[in-house]
Image (cartoon, rainbow, N blue to C red):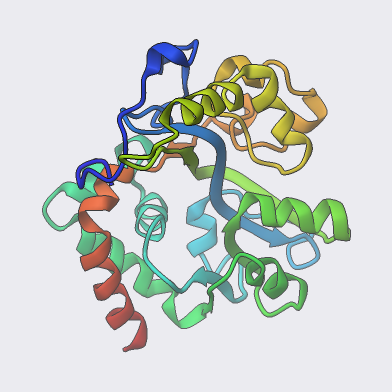
Length: 259
């Protein structure tokens, strides 16, 4: 969107913070991160009462951890990354591996192992529902959906934070908007640490600055993607890489999925 000229560059001097104050990937010339959320996987405790899965290698290991797997139907975003992590690539090296010769083919080859065991979900609500109905033993999901199912509905689900991929929602101002100054005032307000910290009272998505995280109740913070304990093997979505590849890879993914 920035390259296409449909967003206004932001005046960071009016935001009372520096781009470096934000978490990786949350600060852009034309955008400011407002919440952090993640894609990960969760499982049912009653299916694995003894030894529980704890990594993407476990998610892919249907021999050791039998059962159907819920996987996202609409595009391959993050699924290629998870496949490579399951295949032994370090989380910090995933995008290098995808960019290398044969990296994308390697991810598709790994996903093919799980394809016979996959049940595909399309909307955020479907992933926890597949778990609740017992149609899958594990599923990829967005962390907020699983958290809500556990806290509000008492479901016996466990989130696996290892190898989570963090992404953001961001504030933008459309190019040429007549209320640019008002938009900057709003973004400055929404980006204040005390304001950003309050968001976690309503949804289990984290802030986009460390200063805001320090203001969050520890009992709430532990359930957020950006809690220190949840970041030990996390990775951040490379939105620039996906902007360059998503269209062609989504087409390839849908052909592959339908075969």
